[in-house]
Image (cartoon, rainbow, N blue to C red; front, side, top):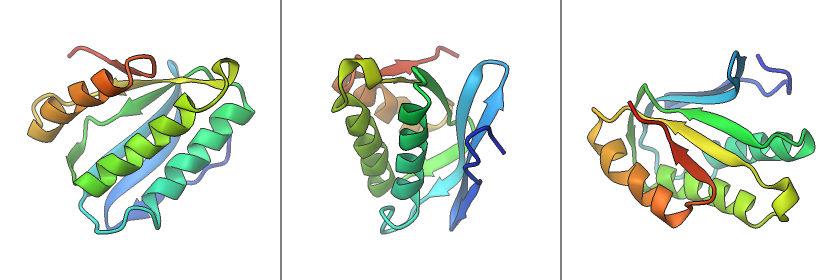
Amino acid sequence: MNTFNIEQLHFENADASLENDKDGLTLVISGDIDMRDTSVEFLPYLLKVHDALILNKIKEIRLNLLNLTFMNSNGIKSVINWIMKSSELPEENQYKIRIIPNTDIAWQDSTLPVLRKLFPDFIIIEQA
């Protein structure tokens, strides 16, 4: 659990959990996101995290994707929608997403740099 009482999400072949750790707040996503409609569970979870970040004036969250083996285009679209929500906020309420990637996973190696280029003020990708 975390200080915001956002429960872990188990959906189809994936998990998402918000965790407090020594580096601050980390959203851990693992498994395979391969569902047709991510707007039912995954996007609402991301938006719940978004609301907690704004309410608590958090300026950076880590996104741990080390064990996320696959994410289809619908999952990527949900992540983009989440990032766009932050980018639409007044500057004093915006936050950054520090991605912890697994560059051995092909989709991450090709997709995450594109996200960084699309949202350079909001995405940081840690180097392995």
